[in-house]
Every structure is written in C-alpha cells, then in structure tokens.
Amino acid sequence: EALSNLEYAFASRKGLTVLYGQAGVGKTIVIRTALESQESRVHCVHIQNPALTRSEFVHMLAGRLGLSPEACSSKSVLLAELEALLRKRHESGETTVLLIDEAQSMSLELLEELRLLENIGTDSEKLLSLVLAGQPELADVLNRLDLQQLKQRVALRCELRPLRLEETFTYIAGRIRAAGGIPKNVFTREAVVRVHERSGGIPRTINVLCDNALI
Image (cartoon, rainbow, N blue to C red; front, side, top):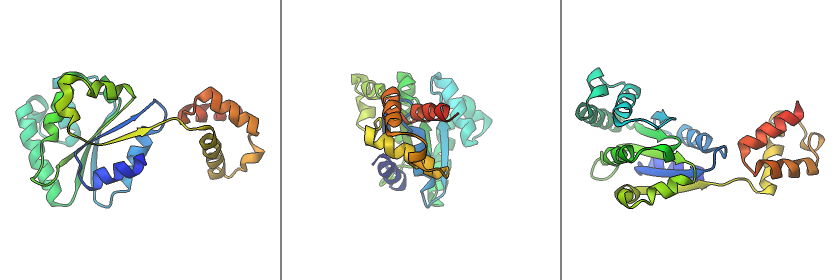
C-alpha cells in the first residue's frame, strides 16, 4: 500500500508525501523502489541527516542539485536557479524528488523552508516532489499549531508498521528462497516465533537475528 501511494505521488507530482514508520521497517527501501518504478527520468536529492541550520540546508541542497556557487550561500539565488532548473526538467518530462530521511529531527525553520519550496509549480502540478520519511514522532511534529500550513499541504500519508507473526514467517521464508535455500530446512516454526518475539516484527532486526543464528 505504501509503495502504491508513493508511486502515485511521484507519477502525478502530488507535492508533499509523508511516510511514517519505526526505524528498520524499510522506509528507505520502499521509497527507492517507488523511484525506480517511474517511467520518466527521476532526479532524487536524498538528505539523510536533516539536523541542519538553514544556511547548511541551503548549501547542501544547492550542491546536491548542481547549482552555482552563489546559490550555496544565497537563498534568493538558490530559489531562482532551482525554479529555472525544475521548469527545464518538467518541460523534458523529468521528475525531481527531494527526499528527507529522519524528518522528525528537522527544525521548525527548516520545515518552513520546505513549505516554501513546495509552492514551486505550475497552475496544475508541482515541479518538486517532497517526501518526508520519519519515525512516528513525525506525526506529532506536523500536528503543531505553527505548522498547520505545512500539514495542509500533505497530499498523501503512508505508514509502514512492524510485521505480524504470519508476515514474519513469509518474510523469512522469502529471504531464504531468494538465497537458494529451503525454508523448512533452516528454521523451525518455534525458531521463527522466537525471532518475531525478539525483533518486534522489525525487518532490520529480523535480518540481524537470522543472520547471526545462521552464522
């Protein structure tokens, strides 16, 4: 469901999309898969540590987009060059995505900057697709009264939850088959139940437990 929502958001240039989920549930993998599924050429700027000042954010964004040195230090130059770049790509049928991981760590001033970036567009569609991926606390951040204007711009919300027990069975079996193994010959049912209990259904933790068990 999350993958379908993201694919739709990118293809239709929906503007701002929010993806929630605990650490290790696979948010980044789902986003990358959605980007790779797009038919048009996609330019993605991925910011993995958004604990930045406003000037640091401007410098990083300009650098990742290949803008001029002046854009790295001037917000007005950044916005002018960014809009020109986005319009050129739009005319060529290309998509630009700004993906921010761990978005719950962003400062209020950076979230306000994102709201302004989200305004760039034509009369019918956005020129920049924004994706905020973060842990469940991100929902609390967006519920702040002083961020209502940003929250109103959220076009799609997706949530990735931990796996249920039966999903953990399917997940582990799928990984073993992909590696050329036979699931029933590797882990007993009791072992998978224990892995699920210890991992809480978090795929990243399931991987670590199973890998160590195999070693």
